[in-house]
Every structure is written in C-alpha cells, then in structure tokens.
Image 1: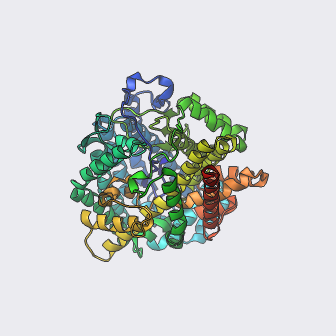
Image 2: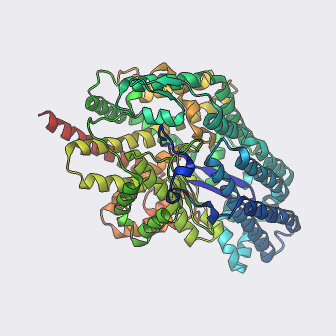
Length: 629
C-alpha cells in the first residue's frame, strides 16, 4: 500500500508498502505491452502540463494558511475553516505526488518525474514550516474547549479523532518555532531513502554470471529474484554468491545510507523527547511498544516450529544439507505452478466471492479499467504496491508480474490494499479515510488466505497439493518469521546507535548475520547460512520506512484469525470485517481490530496463527508419509 496525505498537522506523510516480487530475464519494452495491462494515469491528470497547472494552482493557495494564525481557538467556525483548508491542500497534494511518483516508478532511470517530486517536496516542506503554528496554537487551550467546539459545530465531528490524538500527544508537541524547524527538516531527512532508491534501482553495477546452460546474465534484483527460485541448485549457488558479493563491494556506502536513516529517526525522537526511536514511531498511532516486543519474543519462542518447517523443506527437496539459498526453490519436482495474469484474475475473483458481490465486482472493475500496471519493463521499480491516496479517484496497483504462483498471490495481496482504500475512501470523510500501516496489511494478507484456501480446497493431486501447501508455509516464513527477523534487526540497530556505539556497514552485517543464524538454526545444523548473507540487510527497502516491517507480521496474525471466522460462514464476522475495510482511520488501529474481532494486545492472534501453521505442516507430513509407503 502506498499512500500520501497531509494530516491536520499539515505535514506531508508518505507511507509505502512494497511486497517483493520478480521480474523476468527478457523484459518487454513498455511500448510492446498491450494497453489493457498498463495503468491509466490520465485518470489523475491528462498530461504533465495539466499536472504543472494543478501544482501552480495549489502553490497559489499555500500562503493562505497564514490568515488562520491567531484565530484557531476563537470560535468553532474559525477552527473548522482552518481544518477544511488543510484537508483541501492534503487532497490536492496527494494527487500531485502520486502522479509524479507513479510515473517515475515506470522508469527509475528517467529523472524527469523524480525532479517533479522534488519540486513538490520543496514546496510542501516550506508550506509545513509556514503552517507549523497550527498544532501548538490549538494546544494552547484545553480539550474541554475544543470538545465544546465540536459539539457546537457538527462538521467538526469529522476531525474529532485527529483533534483527540493531538491532545493525547501534546506532551511531545513542540513550540511553534520548534515545529517550524521540524517541518523544514523534511527537506533533508529523506535523503538516505532517496539515495538508496536511485542507487539500488538504477545505478548500482550488476555482476555478470554464466549459468549452467552457458547463458550469460547480468544479475540485478529482478534476475536475482527470478533465479533464486530456480530448480537448478548450481545456478542458485552462482547467483547468490555473485549478487551478495557485489553488495559487499558497497558495504560502506550502504552502511552510511542506513545509518543516515537511523540518525534521522534518533533526531526526531530526541527532539520530541521520546524515550526511544521505537516509541516515537509507535506512539502517534497509539500502538503500545509492548506489541512490538511481544511479537519479537513470541517469534523467538516459536523458532522450534520454524525449524520444523525448514526440516520439512529439506525432506521434500531430498537434501543432505539445507542451505539459505534453497529457501526459494521449488520443493516438488515436475510441478509447474504457473498462472498467467489473465488466469490469475479469474481464480482470484472466484476466491474472493465470500466477501460479497460489491467486493468482487469492484475487483473486476480494477482489472478491466486499468487500475493495474502488470508487467516488468526495463527500469521499472521492482516489487509491488497499491496506492489509494487519490481520495476522489480510485486506487492503483503496480506489479512486476511473471506468471508465478507467488505473483498471483501478490496480486491478491495488493487487491486487498486497493479494496481497503476503495471502501474507506467511499465510506469515510476525507479526514478519517486514511488508515495507518498497522491495519493496512490485514486486508492484503486476508486476500492471500482466501486465495490459498480456494486453491487448496479444489486441488486433488497430492504433488500439486504439496507444492501449494509448501508455498503457503513459505508465506509464514516470509511474512511472519522473516519480517520479524527484520524487525528485530531494525530494533537492535537503533538500540546500538542510541547507546552511542558506531553503526557501520560492518556493524550492520554483524548484527544481521547473528540474527539470521539464530532464526535459521545455523549453529544447530537446521539450515546453513553462507557468510555473504550478512549483506542481505542492504537489499531491504523497508528499513527506510522506519519500524514498518513488524506490521506485516502483526497484520498476518490478525488476518489469519479474521479469515478463519469468515470462511467458517460466520455472517457476523463477515459484517465486522467489511465494516473494518470501510473504517479508514476513524479510530486507533488497535481499537479498529478489536471491533473487527481480534485483540492485538493479547497473544491469542499469534497462538491461532501458529496453530494454523502447525496444521498445514501436519497435512504435509501426512501426504509425505503416504507417498513414502
């Protein structure tokens, strides 16, 4: 999910979710791809000139913010006018950002749209500085007065949630001048992320390897993702070593990039007097840090179950030693889990039928009306995302579809984000439509659960079943364990920096390798982890969305719990889930999930998820035992 907004603080926020996927070796040029497989960005602006005209119109309005200064607590109508102005700027700015950003994602080598995005960043950083008076001024009064304003002016009810949260976080709000400076820091705080994106996607040299068939291939992220799933172990060995050894050449550079992001987090945390970078990231959305720590602890305690999964993979692959480079390879020979894009959309529409006619018909509309950019092309941003930031329009999905089952699952995942945005934008007023990341991944992984259960429920062939069941377990590995592994690394790196210790590329690699060895049972002989995997941290873009990845794991456990109830035919559970999809940011994320039927402050969702994982492993071992007889 990729979402941009200006909240009532009038500060531009960017939330990006990337799900890793693959690109093919022989990418088509964009002009060779049929139009029906390319998104239609003219739904946003008919041309770059129209975009520039809209930017000029918005820029002309930005100085108007100063007329609200000194008036915000004088009357309900004054407060309403200021907040409605903020909402208007937010809506128009989001549309501008997604047009330049998504056009830029189609070819990261083309700096034109990156330049347009930089213009916006400069424009709204300056605007944020001018508007920095708003929150401190509102907080000069007390909540009782603001609550009275809301009761006197019904239109302010749309802003109750954000105003309540403003007073909840009051102790971390600075003076007007300090807030102005904090707003200006946004001009530089994203530099590390920007450098990472440009270097890793467009400018990092690619090593060339010769595969077992004699074919020479340059190994970038797309080719790495493709060949790591190859059935040929020699090719996997060649590609893994070449890819990560190439990263190691730039260990110092990547270390400086990520350390720059860590330092930016520390600055914001210290400036606002939070106790840690973790608290600074979680507190604004009222998420207890205990949820983060509980996730890491629960996963560490459940590593024996994860090691059981690895041993099953080793057994299915017939290996004497399971290696880290084997984790993405097929486990069942002669089973080709291929889904063309057109076939995948048909299967997904069938799988989503439990969610009702409106849900399914809207997904079909997304496919038919070019909300989706499907195939990889040279220079296209890797991965996948859904962008639902255009409140008055429709969401968009970027894919790099390569006819794999995992691509079909990724499509279902991103459609979950899209439908979450669609229903929230349709149901909620703009100030309450934008949901936070903690709940964002629930809708996406929920769709993956439905797709898996639909396919496994109709499959009779044991080998195909084994392949699909193992693919589903790979989802537990990739979403629950791997993302928590990332979360633990991210937490440890910040703790090291906050203790005043150095963070270099070498330090990051040492922290990362220790955690990976622990998770994969390297020292116990469960899975052998080559030393070059110590560079894998440098490959992960999510580390530049600080304390983001843990939400994949928490959302996964929530979605497993909710999906089980819906698939059982519980109509109340279905009603609650559809209301959740329509709830946007109308309440704090933990409370939204409680209303949907899952309490993330308890261990129950995690326990249900582990029970589900063990159930799948039981089924796999049952089939394997039958085949061996």
